[in-house]
Image 1 (cartoon, rainbow, N blue to C red):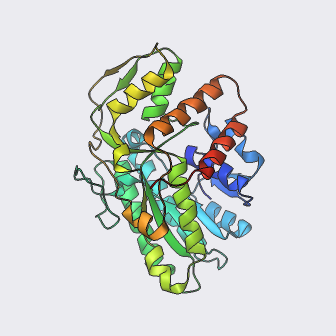
Image 2 (cartoon, helix red, strand yellow):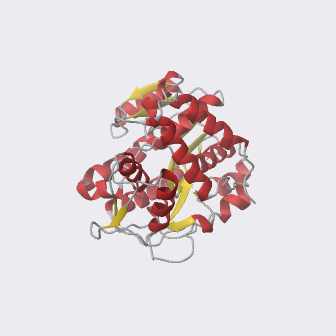
Length: 345
């Protein structure tokens, strides 16, 4: 997999470890603090530090590893950072994706590839309803546009090199706003809230009315794993059905405004919390939802946690970290608890 040192990649690496998978990851060195280090993710996998922007590095790792399934999560994942350095964002999210897919096309042992992009890959029209997989790709800001481009690259590579019976099946996955313990990124709402509350500072939010499809990080990861399993075991007759783009988002009721999230986080964290609105900053979409009926109907995938439960799990994780708990054991326990849940109806 790529991106194993990141927030989502660390959760996925731990989950795969717990399932007994042999995992090799290629990613940049972890930041500090990071879930990767706090949960000792590298103790159970083969970790390669490098960049997907270097085609030779990607080709070397794929050749040495001879993977059966490739999960591509490495990315520049912050909208505001894409305004600061758009060229680097396009390099990683577009060229990096092309490098990963190109490295895989020469290896017959690769059976399935899941390329992870974002819900922001769609041309946002500020609709009240969710975007379907057939909606046009687009993006106002460099990050969103880079994810739309990554989807186009994935589709072009699939049609050009992965359309025969003896080639890998390639799918792409578009998740909502993932949240959960161990996210320490800058300029991301929940980590910013946790940092401020932990230090007794006031949380500053820019767009209280902005609506996002919030979901626990394990929700889309369960979709990625299910999609990878289906792609790896698919028959030729189902290839056209499965080797496409997929949305893995929450129920419509869990698409909530930023203000709702902050208020509930404040009530859970404790009495000494406060926040204020400070308008300004670069453009971001106001309304964003995903239609996940395709994943529900064809993959039988469903979200398992309601948003209130997700926030409980998130606060529990950060409180445990502050208390000096064994965060590898705690994170694995949350994975086990999630795995035991039945998908919601």
